[in-house]
Image (cartoon, rainbow, N blue to C red):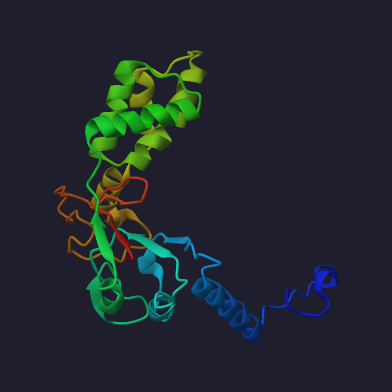
Length: 240
C-alpha cells in the first residue's frame, strides 16, 4: 500500500494502489543492483488457460509486457483452431493475433491413448476412494476413449453411488452400464437433440450440420471438448 494511512487503510476499506512513481523507483533500483551484480532477476511463470477468450486489448498488453526485461515466462493454452479474435472480425490460428503468435513456441499435444486414460482414471479412483473392479475399469477407459475423459471421470462418482445403492463395496460393470444409460455424453445428447429438435418449444437450427450431426439422423463425428486436462486437440504456446 503506497498511501500514507498504510495499515489503517485496511480497516477503512480504502487500500489504494501503488503509484507509478514508486514502481519506477523500484524498477530503477532493481536494474541498478542487477548491473552491479548484487541481484539476479528470476522471472516467474504466467499461465493463461483458454487464451482465446482474451480480447485485442489484452493481447496488446501481453505484447508490450513481454518486451520488459522482468517479464515472466508466458505459457498459454487453447483448444481452438482457426477462430475469430474476440471482439474483432479477424480470423487467426487459435484465435491469437499473428504478431503475438510469432513470439511463441507452439507445443502440440496428442489425444490420450487407451492405456493413458486408464491410468488417469485409476488415479482418480484412488483420490475419490472408489474401489472398482478391473473389468469395470477397462470398460470405463473404453468409454473415455470413445467419448471424453471428463465424461468418464464424472462416471466414477455416479457409478460409486449406484454400487452403494445395491450395497456393494466395489463398482462392477453393471454399475458402469447403468450410469452410462442414465447420463448421456455430448455425442449422444447432440444426436438426441437433432433427432427430436422439432418437438422442442424453441428451435433455431436449420438443415446444416453445424454441430456435427445432420437433421436426417446420420451420426457424424462431433468435436470433443479439448480441455487442458484431457489434452485432446489442444495447443500450448510458450514465450521464448
